[in-house]
Length: 222
Ligand SMILES: Nc1ncnc2c1ncn2[C@@H]1O[C@H](COP(=O)(O)OP(=O)(O)OP(=O)(O)O)[C@@H](O)[C@H]1O
Ligand SMILES: [Mg+2]
Image (cartoon, rainbow, N blue to C red):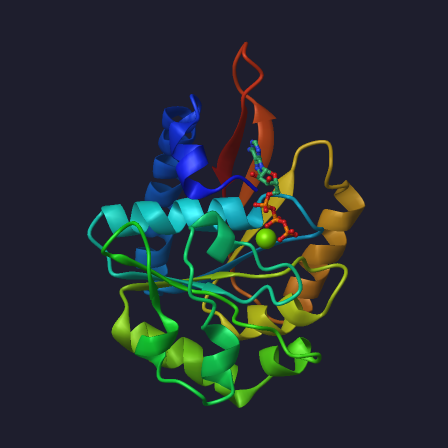
């Protein structure tokens, strides 16, 4: 993934900005309606745009005046720290292990309303930390401190982490990539979410060709 700064210089930046603004507006209505302020972003497979979407959606929440925390819980393929150019790699795992307080795990970003909790250095058994009382407590404490708590999660099909996380989060936003995510994979991922009793608040279709220039956008559906 390109870095945040490279993305800002990209000629398509305003195009994506508009898409994510619209997604965030729909999402905020949905969250308000349900009275929730926390959700995770997942998809069926790897590389379907979860991290890119979560970073951009979190940024719009922050720009609209909300104190926002983006937590990286993809211990297998963490990418937000690099994308947002946060040098400190202290975050989720360090907090879960009880080594630091919430404030120390929340790193500054380019926007004053937006904090990033990077994964930290993942231990050999990261999945065990997803399914823990500490993870449940992290989400609860974060909600007391921030207006919105957004979690970038791993894909649902290859590993169990997101099935567990989905039952701890107040909502789940599902990303699928046009012509890449198979219908059968979406069905299986949805079955997992259903079994976990997850609250699916919406879906994003990524990679939709929306212009003559073949720009690939995101579209929100719920
Ligand atoms: N709509 C899009 N247009 C152009 N590039 C995109 C789009 N969505 C995602 N990408 C690019 O695809 C790559 C994968 O995206 P991203 O890292 O967000 O996926 P992911 O689902 O989080 O992957 P992982 O499973 O590794 O966590 C990145 O390089 C990202 O910049
Ligand atoms: Mg990712």
